[in-house]
Structure formats: C-alpha cells, structure tokens
Length: 83
Image (cartoon, rainbow, N blue to C red):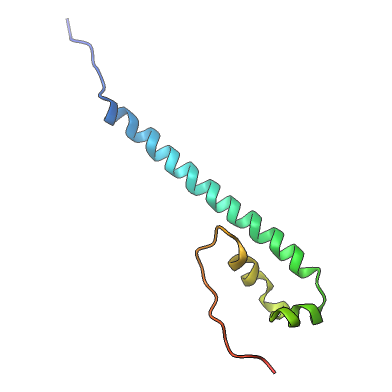
C-alpha cells in the first residue's frame, strides 16, 4: 500500500495567495477606472470659463480625471500660468 499524500500548508496556500493578489489588482484597476470615469463626467459638465478658473482646459479632462482618482499613483507636473 502507498502512504497517503499530504500537502503542507505553504504549498497549498500559495495558489490561493496568488489568486487573492490577482483579484486585489483587478479590483484596484476597476476602482481607478470607475473613479476616473465619474470625475470626467463631472468635469465635462462644467463650462469653459469654470474650467479655466480651475486651471484646466477641456482637452485635459481625461488626464485630469485619471490623476484625480484616489487610486491613481500618477502625478501632474504643473506649468506656469496660461495667459
């Protein structure tokens, strides 16, 4: 008779840990895209004058919405005032 096969916990837990990490990354990406989309929709409803008062141009809305997400790890380099 063959002895029963037993798995040690670290070997059995490794695939579950990888699955949890993958799920966490997918969820973080989904949250970042959701927040960016909501920010873009809010900013796109503003008129050009209000956007200018905020220091934005309409052409920048997608990148600003991406940067404004609390889940974003990107930064915006500020330039001098636009006249």
